Length: 204
Ligand SMILES: [Zn+2]
Image (cartoon, rainbow, N blue to C red; front, side, top):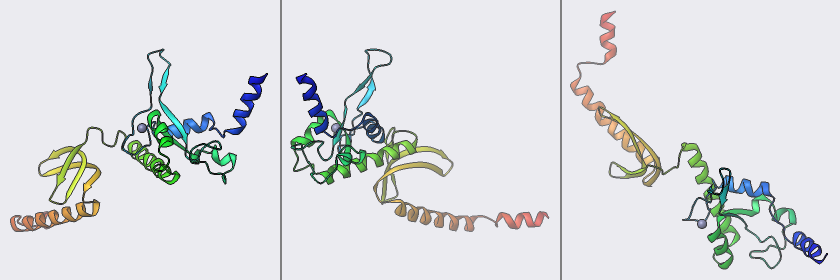
């Protein structure tokens, strides 16, 4: 009987996440830890059985689920505390670290890390594979360095995919390619007898 009372006290004092919220937090993070610089995979297969899954991720509360917890906000309602907006997906190590270093990991810091991780997860998804998987450091001209992949070459044409700029940006790259095109056109005009259009005119 006593155990029952204890259980009910625990369940009413903590604004826990539902299973659905936990699953969505994990999925939105791409099943990776949201801690800046970590990003470790938190879910994978278990050898226990062909259906078993190992999960080392934690749906951590940004503002604590209960009074006296870390980053507790008394102005939040119970519904807000258990809402997905108040959760961040972390590996087990970092779910402990954020509670042991509260002065560093304030709610806003955690919210930014969550947003960043979800942004990366979306990029990975849109790229069709890990954004940096099989990527190389590619320098294009003196001012553009990016992480990407050489997709192929044909004659003087190079196809390159840039996932992330280390130096320069898209504008720098476009400026560089325009300069390149300009030089190529000047060379064409000097060596070619005339534009293709003029030749087709003569045939008619
Ligand atoms: Zn981590």
